Amino acid sequence: MWMLFHEQPRHIVQLGLGSAALTKFCYHRLPQARVTAIELNPNVIGICGAQFALPPNDARLDVREMNALDFVMDPANHNSADILQVDLYDEEARGPVLDTPEFYQACADCLTADGGRHHDHQCIRRLSELRQEFAGDGTGVRRGGVGARNP
Image 1 (cartoon, rainbow, N blue to C red):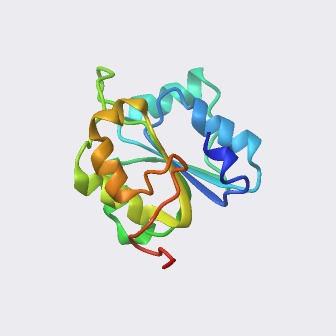
Image 2: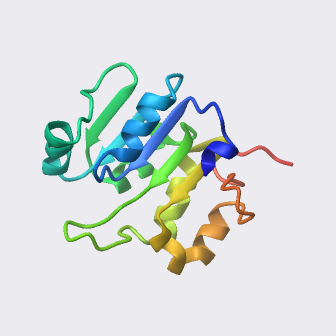
């Protein structure tokens, strides 16, 4: 859906790798974009490479074994993502994890001024927090936070 509003992203960040379907789609279909995927579980990364044809890291693809919270809290990642896809589950496929206002604010801080986000549908319970951090108009375009432009 975000592709309707942001056709030429330069940097796409995926929090949670899953089967790597979103990561691979962005990598193959958006050749102008760098794609960063953050995954805590090294087994998930290994299985995606061995069983689901996840390409190895290169100049455009960077799959990192790390905690998504550490990634979004790191000021080096603020104002860096044109698109942020959040799809975080625990090892038993329960989610969402990292379901706090602080996490959502840190996600907003990672976006560029015209960046957009996509949260898994499980985040509906926290819609009020998401609306505080993002526009709330259905486009996913960010308002406020690091790097935001004043209207």
